[in-house]
Image (tube, rainbow, N blue to C red; front, top):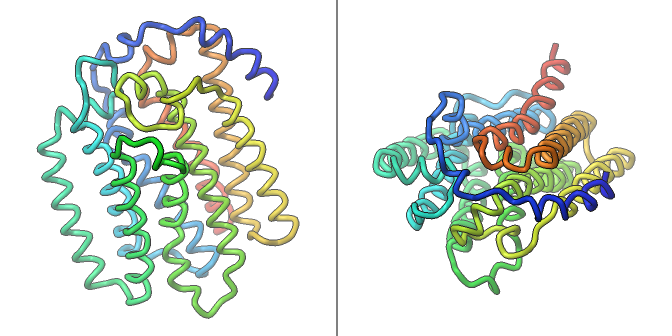
Amino acid sequence: MLSEIQESESYVVVATPDLSQATLGRRLRVWQLVNLCSLDAVTVGLIWQLIFTLQFCGRFPSLVESSIIGTSIWLAYTADRILDSWQLQCGLPHTSRHHFHHQFRRPICFLWMLALGFNVILIIHFSTVNQIKWGMSCLLLVCFYLLNVQKSNWNIRRIPKEVQAGCIFGFGVSLVSWSSASDQPTFQLFFSTVVTGFLFSINCATVAYWERQLDAAQTFFSWTARRSATLYPIAIALVLECALIMSLLFFEAIPRLIAGCLLGSTLCLAITVLTNRKIHMHCPDALLTKPLASRELLADISLIFPPAVLVILSIS
């Protein structure tokens, strides 16, 4: 797998299509709204919150807990996209989601304020003191992330944006478990959170790789925009993720349900990456002329479908 990717990279670099094709054809399909409105990220968060709560709390998350985490994820993703779209150079190639948030910036900002108020009300009236404490720690990380990624000094960005986002996301979906684990051993929860954050980071890096030329054109901060990026690091990360999951499972450092969901998602993400690579090899223009939202949606489905199936099987 790794050797094939290395051998194919020279072909991809030579056969680079005109980037202007990536911003043509702004016909909006209904299914694209799932990605453009960050609903796929919300779904990923709710699925993994369900997994962690089932495993470490022995129950389903409440409607309020799911509403808070779902709204919080939407707020964080939408804020990041609004900030990016604010400095969008429309004359240069850019992604559909940045175009969408630039075009509808005012109504989205209005909805963002309403969602923020709704979330604050839910947190104040329905969250426990322990949940608020853990939630505030996650909020501080999100604020630091949003401020950090908008700065223009590369020297202060020692940790790639994708790693930051993935780790914070992994911590966020496990918040209910952490707030309920004060009297329980937390080593399994700790390792489960870390390896889940690593998987989310790989997912973010994969999307960044697909969008590397558009990010470079807009001078957006991503690990791929400042160098000649290849799939090789992502392939290594996927292999390491599988090895890490199996090792932790062998030493009983993570529960079987968590391990199964992680392995299933990792394999599905690997299949998605390899499929898109083969399409690019045979038709270099395809990955830039087809909607980028479709690829991002496929990457997120890799994090949704396997865990959903395993959860259904485990409770049936």
